[in-house]
Image 1 (cartoon, one colour):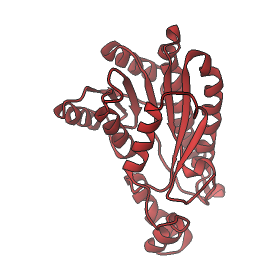
Image 2 (spheres, rainbow, N blue to C red):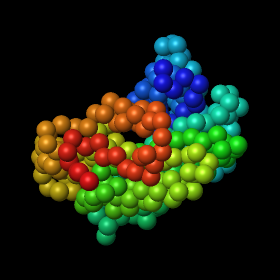
Image 3 (cartoon, helix red, strand yellow):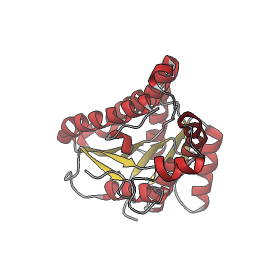
Length: 260
């Protein structure tokens, strides 16, 4: 129970990577706020955690709405007393070549990934900075925080941007005992990735099997998808690490796809 007495707020936590992270933090003793735009799904996750004896609550959370983020974060503080760990995880994907990329889609991807990370960070820092109590902010980046792939201009740009935000926060937050990290998964077989397989097959003119073997897993050392557990255990490690030794750093969790 390494996180006993700590409060974690995880965005995009009703499914996929966010849900697995919330489960791991709750199992380690943290009180966890399941923040998601799908409130019904968030409530189901929170109820499941409560049945396991964990402290959990669901929060209706549109990460692109400043007022909603401020109000949702305050609700967590009012309920659990603080925010010690923020995992900014909400995200979407739109696949298209740049010359055909709709500006509305570009703005939506940037709003959820970059604006959402900024707004949730700003809201959490109000509580983390108070009396220099400190905290940990973890962004869900991607291998695409370091690499580029065709058809993903907005996503790659957004995920690169999270590195910059985390690095500035590492410097600004240090006097207040706040540290930051970016966890950068390779392809994880979530609904987000499942949706991309036929899309990429159509765009690239190859079979879905070739998308998986060549595009998604071709550069891994073992031909394996990154698992939800791989990512969640990395977040747990960073959430429980005792010093600021790793602040401002990104951690690539990709079965050898990208090494830096």
